[in-house]
Length: 422
Image 1 (cartoon, rainbow, N blue to C red):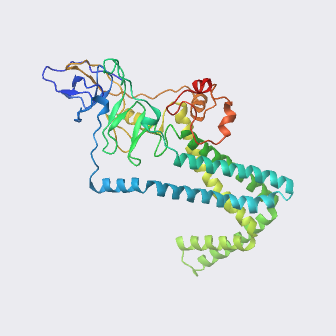
Image 2: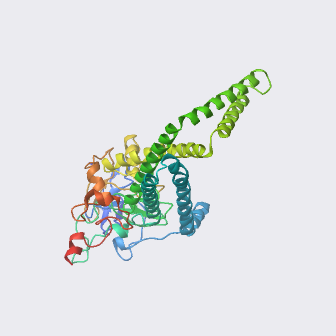
Image 3: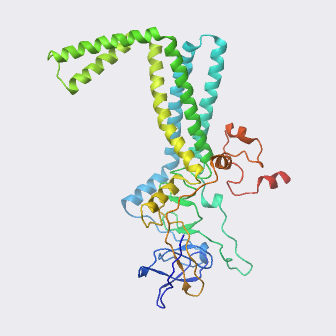
C-alpha cells in the first residue's frame, strides 16, 4: 500500500487514534482530508468517526443501537437466530436422509442383489451420510471465529502504553452492533452482528471453515457415488429404459399430430401438451424402482453441479490465500473503486498505509492499491484449514475424521506442543 507523499498543512485536523490514543494529523489527498489513514505509532487504521477515549484506546468501545426498520429486523433476526438455525439444520439433515433413503432402500437392492455386496455398499453410503450430516451440523452450529476467540489484543508495555506497531493493520469496526477492534483479515457480518476472522461468507470463518469445506467435499463424493450406481442400474436394465423411451416417443408424436390438426393450441400450449404426455407415458411404462432411480439421478446430478462449482471456487480462493470477501475487495480495487471498508454488508476496513508520529504529526493516507495475493499453495492451505500438521499428527488421514473443534492453532490457547509437554 502506498503512503501519502505530501505532508499535512499546519492547520490539518488532528484526531486521536482509537487504539493507542496518540494524536495523529490527518493527511490530505487531492486537497481534501484522507478518509482513512494510518497511525504512525501503533499502525492502526483510523478514520474521522469520533469515538470516546474513556478507559484508554482499544479498551473503549461505543455501543449505539441500530435504528429504523432495518435495525429492528436485524435485532429480531438475531433474537430468533438460534431456534431458526436449529430448524434449518434439522430440515437439511432430514432432506439429506430422505434422498439417501431412496438410494439405500430402492436403488442399491436393485443394483446389487447379492446380500454381501449390498451390505458393503450400504455401509459405505451410510458412512457418507453420517459424515455429511455431522460436518453440516458443525459448520452451522459452531462459532465461525469471533475476534476474541481467535486473536488476542496486543499487550501493553510496562509503562502502560502500547509498543510501536502493536496494532499494525488493525481497524475499528464502526458497525453499531459491533464497535470493536478488528485485526487484519477480519470482516464484519451484519447478519451475525459481529466481526469474524477470515470471514468467507455468512456464518463461515476461520473456526468452522474445516467443517464447511469437508461438508462440500462429502456432498460431491456422495453425489458422484450415487450417479455411478444409478448409471450402472440403468445400463443393467436398458431394455426397460428403451421401452419407456419408445412409449414416450409415441405419445409425444400423437400429441404433436393433435396439435397440427388443430385439436390443441399451438406454440407453448403444444409444447406443454407434448411434455405432459411424454412424462405420463414414462411413468406408466417404467417400474416404480426405475422412476426412483431417475429421481435420484436428477437430484444428485443437479447437486453435484452446484456444490462442485462452489467447492472448486472455494479451493481456488484457498490456493491464493484469500477468502471470498477478500476476493470481492480485490476486484473492487482492480475496478478502480476507492472503497477501503469493503466488508460483508458493512463494517470497518482493512489495509495498510504510510506512517505518522505522535503529537500531531502527519499520518499516512490509505490509498489502497489493487493487489491480488499469491498464496503459499493449495496443499499448504489445506493442511492449515483441515489440520494434519506435524504437531497434530495423523497427516491427511485425520481430515476424514469428523470433529467439533477446529484444528490446533485456530482458536486461542496453548499450542499443541505445550499441551503435550504439560
